Image 1: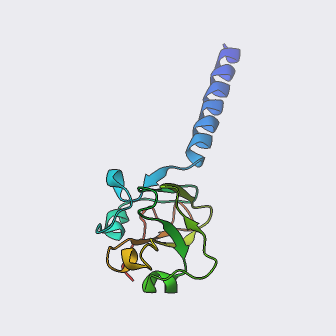
Image 2: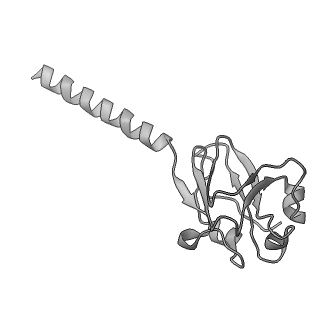
Image 3: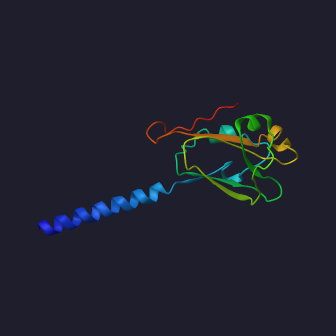
Length: 142
């Protein structure tokens, strides 16, 4: 009887560890929902209900050639400008992983920043330091 109980406890322990390992890999959120990263949509307002934590990913879906994704500083985010040497993602299925806490800013640089300025194709995410400190994403217009 004791052996059966020990075996059951081991099975429960291993199952718990496996479940935690799967959860630790993070979730993927699609920017803009099913319609994706697009011109004229309020992406910032849309994401305010996301609960991003370290390990989660963002998926920017869009028709390649029509849009792009560039990670920029807060200053460049506000101005909708791309600094020299910035990495421009153009696959149409770009994945950004949050490996640490903090603010990250993304814009579409198409038409010399017009998509960002006029089409509202800019969004930032502020991931909290710990899961326990905040389950709500901070999203405010700058």
